[in-house]
Image (cartoon, rainbow over all chains, first blue to last red; front, side, top):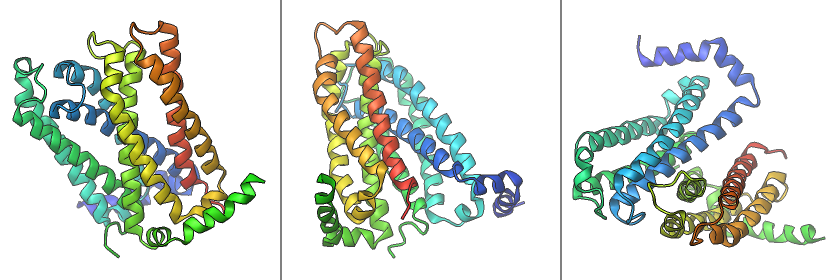
Length: 168
Length: 163
């Protein structure tokens, strides 16, 4: 079964019909989804700015990460659950939306960037905890993360405007 | 009376080349909204950190005042991005906003939030020695509540679109 058939099946379910018929479903979940993204991106940006050495310079990196990342994960849970439901309410339409595909790709890249950061340079954070800016590889991770999340927000807005950035 | 006298201003905003240009391009609307959201992300992310510190969930042993001083420039930058992109969004649909109750609620909440931010919040957050726990907690809760309300009212402008 390919992805498009799964999307067609999602659109045919009773849950989907209920979500599309409801006047409050989309506005409510769209609002919670937006707040979730703001929480994720807003907290990650703090870590990124610290890595780049332009904010919270006097605080150890591990202390910033330890306090901030739980909030990032809470935001991510909100964003993921509401995002999945929003997707199932118009699966086929989103399957064909270039902006939606770009957003998913960017999310994967942001996740990969965070994973690589945590598995490599962050492992010996104790050696550079107090440095501001952080070592080059950590700065690159911070800069990429900022760029990905800005692009994710932009792609999300583009989905809302249908054809998105088609320059039309 | 005052409301009556403002309508021509909103009509004028919408008639400017900027207003017309944004109105006619879905890409431009999406772009300006994205910039507005990125400003909001910066504003709310940095404020959350400061308010968590006030609530006693700060970074390590760092005093809230240090966190607040380090981040207030970024919060102001986020606010500046919003205050530049907001009027651009408004100009693309000024008359609709003029007739939208959520728009006026948002403007009122925004005025209160900005005033609170630069007076009480700034004073309590940067206080050395730290403010009393009760007043710190109260300030953090009002701050988070006000800014979340501003954001929700903003979303409501888009949701409640009656003609």
